[in-house]
Image (cartoon, each protein chain N blue to C red):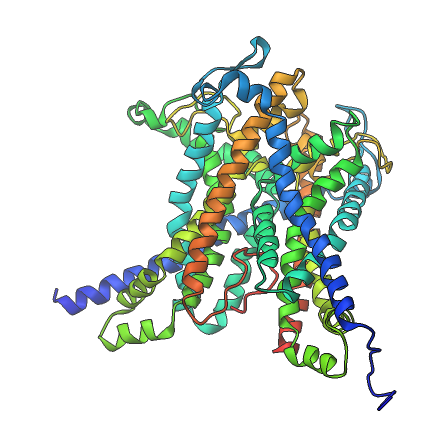
Length: 329
Length: 281
């Protein structure tokens, strides 16, 4: 009983208290892990039938005819990969350009507002992109298709009926949607590159371009990570794509052809799946989508971390939550 | 042209290209906002806000059922996600660096990257299939699953902003670690956590895909949790792909309303976080 009133907090078996706190909060935190595991488990459980019946042929089959029980998911796989990769090719350079402009070139007073505006793109819901796509973009593309000379229309990548909906519309919408994510992460990466890199380049007499090239080269793993993060977004994008791609399960190189994607077929047909095999086939598509995006995202995070932990900037969430302001531009 | 001039020219072209890419991204933003304003405001009338949908094909009616439905779904999602998300974030921040905390963070990041349509399938198989009925609960659950990782991660980030000296002070006064975390660190970060919840709400308010086969949508006004319920996003979708002119008009109004809500939530959250960052340095 040396000083009975001193501790503001009553000290009652601190170790037991701490242990309880740790276990109790840890148990709740475990829910996060359980959820991730449960998603994988449920997807596997509900795609058993289709995996057992079709095996790998499911992914090479080109005919999707639920009525006759024929399920070949190749057109969806193709559509998802083709649209996402094309979108990345369009959005990647633009996203890097934006990141470079905002963090290296723009006058200081412009940086915050520009970062904010580009991130607004990420805040617009997918369904709104889809609505805009259906009523504004698709008519524009239809006009473009109709106006295109016959000689060009003969090329395989421009063949198909001039209906407006199709791969091109999907790629354009996806590109717009992916840009803010990739550029936000690329901006973080550029910030993580030590200033000495730039100073060294300038000291050697480099032009601006040469200095920035050196910075980008130094941060190349992170930049690739930023692009992969965009790819992960594009692979899983559903509403905007399903509204403009035409939902036609037929793989084609043509940008003008109506096609289909894995996410889009889920959105369209899931509630119509009358029998178990049909439902299992759809869930299997979801399972593969899940696994592919998981791998792409993990890879992207790994690349970004490996760069950032090497520099003095503390590693942070690779997730560019739009408009949180968690990044002090 | 000598070598120096060429290098400077290349550099200038590069700078111009970077500036052009900013414009290239802002152009669609401007276009989308322009069309939302042009087509959305005109259709945003009294009946849109306060009437329920008319029978199929009949002009008139509104989105009252969907507005209320979205509020119900967001409330359910928050009930599912806020406790789990905040406590998981607290755990990761408090026991940073331990193996289990890393696993939790890894799982949260993984969940964050799961396509929303896949979350929909998951919610369908655990909350719809067993009872053989689409319901508001299933929809809220799907949105909650998407919300948990967002809240966990923002909570963790914001707890990190709380100065070490606060925790040290509490420990020095004889508090246990639990007490310090629970009654000193967490309250200090509370305003930030609340804004984090706003951000999460803003993000899931615009989700459509996870609701398609959980909440399903409903043409009638309903607030029952065990029945299908309308949602703003799902109704915009069904109206947008319908053949009716009047429904297209209403879809634009719905989109306008949705974007306004999402932007307002995001801007409030952004301003609040900025203030917090300034406060805690």
